[in-house]
Image 1 (cartoon, helix red, strand yellow):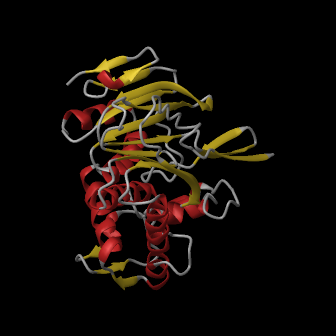
Image 2 (cartoon, helix red, strand yellow; image 1 turned 180 degrees about the horizontal axis):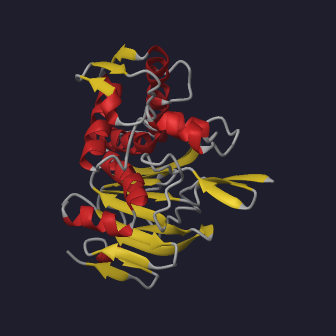
Length: 332
């Protein structure tokens, strides 16, 4: 028997955005579906509208989707080479750079593995080891030859930027809204939350970390002011069950299997949405011990780890924002 579950993290419920307080100016609000998830936006100010956000996200999805045959990325995967520019070149550059920095725990070449498990098509299956071994020979950024504009893929290699694209889209929308003079905004793009400025009523942003046992509820809260990107990657977000075994969508690029890192979720806090998105996936794959070592050697993000044993651990920079739960602090 096979069962499949996808959790769409919305601003109102699953990311548990607790936007309290009254403002003198009513915000603009909208919800829409894009990038295979439900998204929401709430903004204050006269310089832009929620339609600017949805238009920008739809524009980027048309370029970056691995499942749309007309997208630049799909055409690159089909042809094996292409000339890239603009957002496509920028995002691939960032993806390759992050993969190198993180030692391959985040890898934009995992698409053949993702397809083998049936996640894009929703025809879920468990590939055998022989198939995985064959596909793994095509996985790794060494198979991508990119000079900043021309990219060539080795035979069998295909790209999937889904592990970083929503963060890039959130960051792009934040920059767009700032340019248009928006006073404040909060974007919830699935598991990606991005805030811009401070709430006009002076109250704090409050963002919930979903409880893996019941993702409609928050297991903890992050309370902060000003602009920040928060991205959660979790085993509960998308998975299927076959013969009593649960297989989630976050694959380990080294094994081709769902990452068995001992974590249920990782939430990353950073100034840049693209970085936060890629790191949340990478840290989930790495696990608590290796992820902690990586954090200690970095200075551009903080994190909250939820372990399969039910423990919550926050890096010392994230701990001051965390409430509503018992947790341990990871010190440098």
